[in-house]
Amino acid sequence: MTTPVQENLIQKNASYASDFNKGSLALPPAKHYTVVTCMDARIDPAEAYGIDLGDAHVIRNAGGNVKDALRSLVISQQLLGTKEVLVIKHTGCGMLSFTNDDAHAVVDKNLGADAKEELKGLDFQPFPDLEKAVKDDVQLLKTSKAIPDSITATGWIYEVETGKVRQVV
Image 1: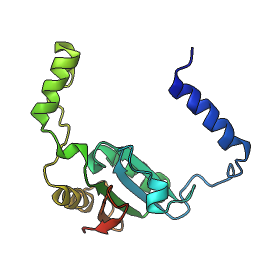
Image 2 (image 1 turned 180 degrees about the vertical axis):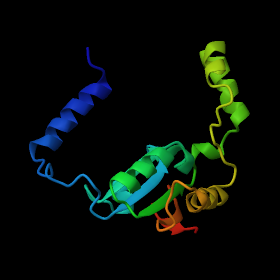
Image 3 (image 1 turned 45 degrees about the horizontal axis):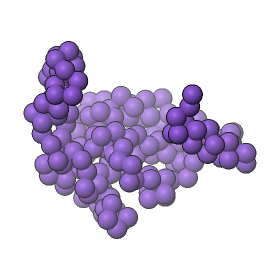
C-alpha cells in the first residue's frame, strides 16, 4: 500500500516526465558553481536563487552546513569542475533554536539508550548567531586544504519572511 506522500510523488512525477526534454544535459553543472543551503522546506533553491536545471549543484543539509557538505563539495570541484560556492543560510533556521545537549537529550528521550550511544559525541552543529555561522562556514572553505585557493566562496542569508537574499561575506 502506498502512502499519500508516495502517491503524490508518483502523480507529480508522471506529470513532470510527460513533457521532460532535458535528459541530454551534461553531468557537470553548466555554470560551474555549487550552492550549500538548508534543507528547510520553506526554501525552493531553484526558484529563490535563480537556478535552472543543469546550472549548479545544490547541496542541502540541516543549517546549510559546509562541514557536512565537504565530501560533496570535493566531488563537485575535483570531479565535476565547479569553481564557486555560495553558502546560503536563512532566517528562522531551526539550527538557531537548540544546543547539542538539547539534541542529544531528545534522542535519548525519543529513541532510547542505544540511539544515544550510537550518536555519542556527534556534533549536531547548531549555531546561536546566523551571520557568524555564515562567516564561519565561508572561512572554513577558505582555510580547508580540501578546497583549492582558486575557489570563490561567498556567504549569504535568505530571508524566509521576504524571499530576499543579502550578502554577508
